[in-house]
Every structure is written in structure tokens, then in C-alpha cells.
Amino acid sequence: DAGVTQSPTHLIKTRGQQVTLRCSPKSGHDTVSWYQQALGQGPQFIFQYYEEEERQRGNFPDRFSGHQFPNYSSELNVNALLLGDSALYLCASSLKYGRPYYGYTFGSGTRLTVV
Amino acid sequence: AQTVTQSQPEMSVQEAETVTLSCTYDTSESDYYLFWYKQPPSRQMILVIRQEAYKQQNATENRFSVNFQKAAKSFSLKISDSQLGDAAMYFCAYQLDSSYKLIFGSGTRLLVRP
Image 1 (tube, rainbow over the protein chains, first blue to last red):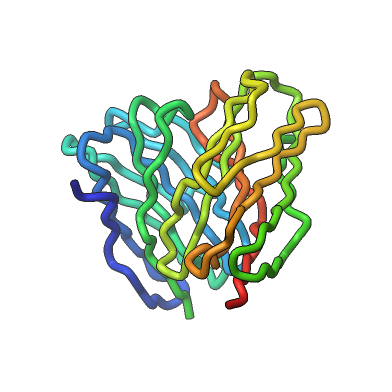
Image 2: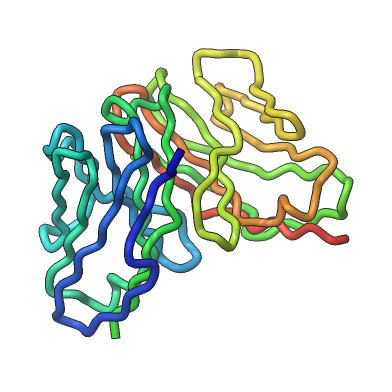
């Protein structure tokens, strides 16, 4: 049973560029959440997708956007990259809106470096 | 504002000994869940243990147990018989039953001495 798969594992981009990160949820899961983890900090919630719609959003600017596809996979897009966007981006999948009862399965993340 | 505080940036324990990691949280809600996650160098967050706030009994998972003090808003993790594989970052997290997001603390790095 495949867990959460994220690609790429590492990425280097230049300030001002745009980036797309991808996530395939665990088999059977229908909800995908994205988190940003800056170095030495805990993950911060970016947003969650369920039924191809953004259900909840954290305190992130509109430069951060996402999409969920009919097969439940998801993309995170970041426009106009800033140095401060350098972080580990984690994807977490779950069932039914990510209600805490069902728990989350995390991927190993994409390490984004902005230079 | 809902916050999670981990006041120990780093802890060290001798193999086979017991260690306790501290966590406090702040919320005015009554229905929520608390979690401890482990993040090894592989970077994947792995759920260690979960506690429902409405349950008075402390959760246990093999060598891992929690001390949940709801009135004090405290949620500590005890690791018994520590093993080298327990070395990792440990994050305390909180989620309202009505919310879709986890709120994490800043983490505690656990070192295990052989």
C-alpha cells in the first residue's frame, strides 16, 4: 500500500520564478493538505483540498495556490518566489476533510531552495 | 489564538532509559485532539500517539505514553526504554474537532546516547 508520494524531492529556484510541487495521496485517501516547514520550525498549514476545492486556508498570501485533481492528487503552486519561501513543503493525506479522528499520513516532503 | 509551545529545544537520554518531552497548548475550545509526531532525518512526519481531549485516560502506544492535564493545558510524552531509533525531532500538535488543520509546536530534538 503506497503512502504519500511527493515530487520532486529537492528543487532550486531563483527569486521571482514560479514553482509547482506535486503530491499523490495514500491509496484510499481523498483529502490533501499542504504544510510549509521552515528550517528549525514546526510545519505551518497552507491549505487543504477536498473534492477538488480549497476547504480551509492558513495565513499564506495569494502567491500560494493549489489544485486537486479527480484522482485526488494535488499540486501546490508558488508564484513570484521570495528567499523566505525556502522551506520543506509537506503534503498530508487523510479521509473526509482531514477530521482528526481519521488522522493524517505525511509524505517526505519537497525541499525548496530559493536563491 | 491557538498555540502550541515546546519549551525544550533539545533533550538527551541514555539508551534504555526514560525521557519526557513537554508540551503546552492554548485554546478556549473544548473539543480537540492532541498528537505527538516524530520526524526522523527522512523528513516524513510519523504519528507517535494521539489523545482525544474528551478522554480522561492517558493514551499509550507500547513504549510511548502521554500525561494529559486538560486543566493545565499540558500534554507531555514519555518514552520508556529509549532506543537508538527514537532519535528524531518530536513535534506536539493540536487540532480542533471542527477544523481541518494541525497546529504544530516548534519541536524538540531527541538525542539517544548509546
